[in-house]
Length: 486
Image (cartoon, rainbow, N blue to C red):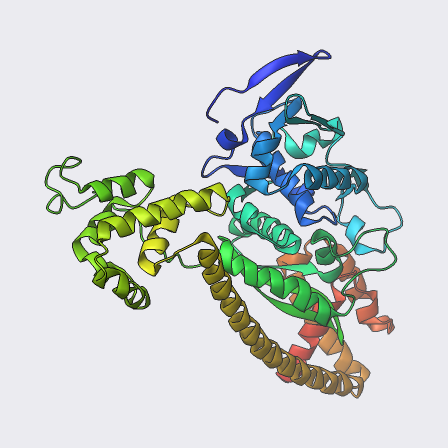
């Protein structure tokens, strides 16, 4: 993990002073138990940033015990954007807003009276030490099974991706996608089904014990939660998703989510470096300005391309902008140095994520200030979101039309079923049972399905007698059989 952390004795325990800059190296990942990912936790983005920090503090696959963890307040602000006051507020929120961890699926169904659950805060204590400029965190021992010595049933998420997300819903959806992606690869499936009530709890929309919940209408939930998370993850994450709603009669009861990996648009870095023919005796043969660019973080091959193409390296729009500068005697060497100085100014303001990326855009697009850079990024992001919203509206309109057509067809088939004779109904029901018994998803309910099948002749309500969760599938199979005239 880089540097060896400093330790000191405190109340018979170890105090670990964590270097966040060293811990959050490129490629570092956060590991949480699947139970923690499935937990219900209504969090703000600031609180999630603190949890993100915990991901850099704890080594979940190697650490076997908690210690007192100290982090530098300046590093916290630099990496998360949380200053002293917002950090204090976020930590207080974590302690007063406990996480509800389901210990069984019944904790989500809202029907079982005896639910297995565990409620506890993320942190047991937090203390700011002004004389040292650090914040000390202590974790509850009850969190050990969910954060330490994890060998199975855990989810690995990219810390860098999480830190880029600006919506709490996107944050928690990303964790859910990461967990399900790992499970789907094992099962060789491309999608997963989740009930609407469970999804709302996991995303932090609903709270288990709150009587009033936001976005109660599915349309509001879709626009403000699902579509928002979908659009942001498409911009920033390594996993994307599509979804379709699942209805029971006319009520949406769940969502079928398909996870995809976006096609990478990045070119792989050259394994060779700069073309030797451009700079025969590297590094001595490299022009001084390009050397300075490369030392600052600019790609070597791009530097060679810049020096070879000169002003043609700029975008057509930027080339027009710098024309007065060129005719006035401005040189490429001075232009490059101006952009390097712009990078240094922007870094002081904390607006730079990648030195090389910033320089490339500053040179190609003739950025003249950090504010202009942010303005261009914001305009591009806004245009993208507007496009996505328009696409989503078209897609939703198509889905709504398809859903209405399906409702009409289902109602017609249900009415047709009611007109069948008892013998015909019994035949249809037995065909439904045969199909159910061949489905792997209902292996656990096989005995109960067979019991219901044996009672078909007695005239008892067939579909009402089926186990919970099986009835909806049985009705779908019945409609398919009738539609095919079987």
